[in-house]
Length: 405
Ligand code: GLV
Ligand code: MN
Ligand code: MN
Image (cartoon, rainbow, N blue to C red; front, side, top):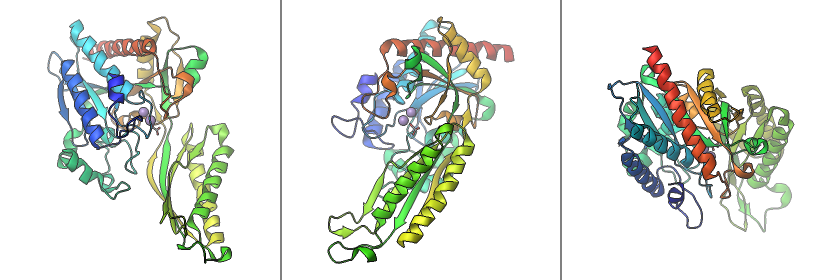
């Protein structure tokens, strides 16, 4: 399934599957087919999340949510996101075939916007399920000026039905996700699985540097207001601020730059760049954002350019629910494995789902700690253990739910 999903891409020889593209459509249809094969009732909600539901024997509304995302970064690995969706489908298929009567429905969600690569927004699908979607996000646009709203309509979604995507708080039992670790900890310790304690917060912004376009042959160096030269200084300032916070696992990244007009013989008039700042706790991340503003103002003043920083995403660190961490630890320990607990530096749909319900994640060992890279790899053996642990965890939730009644 993972190999097949990896062939659904915008670019030959490369895995790139952005939100609400034709590749997303094809992957969503394939995932929906697998969900049906696993005995799930499938629908697609207003934000294009594919949702496969296995009803409880007694027909309760209480729902345990499993899932991850099927969008990718540009030139991605094949496990980030897809692994969690496939693991959830396989786990639910195994549960259904075992004939166990679960005291809640299980709903598998294949979210479409975890990476936040196409639009300057992220976690749209999970935010809708959690009931925290900001309607203003629907008006955000991609580099071609297409809004989320227009892209949803073109994709075939009913944008007016956002409210129906939401799961009511009293109906939510919890949210569980399997994900590749995307870091080196488990491999270093020789462990196939880990249990996530918290998901690091993140702030993202679009930075616009406005200078003045001019003739590369005639505008003297001293009279230029070169937006790219100023943006380049800003990139270095962001890196310096990030490095200064290394003790707090602060990381600050400029991953994308658009230069306008972008011609060999024109002094750059404007640059748009992305900013992504994260840390293991919220305070260092906020402090870094505070430090970037005066650094930008200093560069802007000295170079006679304008620099505007518009925050597009700001989500605090989400703790995984201690009781869920315990259930997952028991599940992993039941295979004779040490239940290693670790923090997630990467973002996940759980950050949005935590606003709705209890959350927990199982991490799978990642070769070389490499992710957001085509070399990303998790072994079939480790993935099998993760699916087995997920099945155990669902059974653990079922026991708790029966006690709750
Ligand atoms: C998602 O992979 C993110 O953390 O950017
Ligand atoms: Mn991911
Ligand atoms: Mn990712």
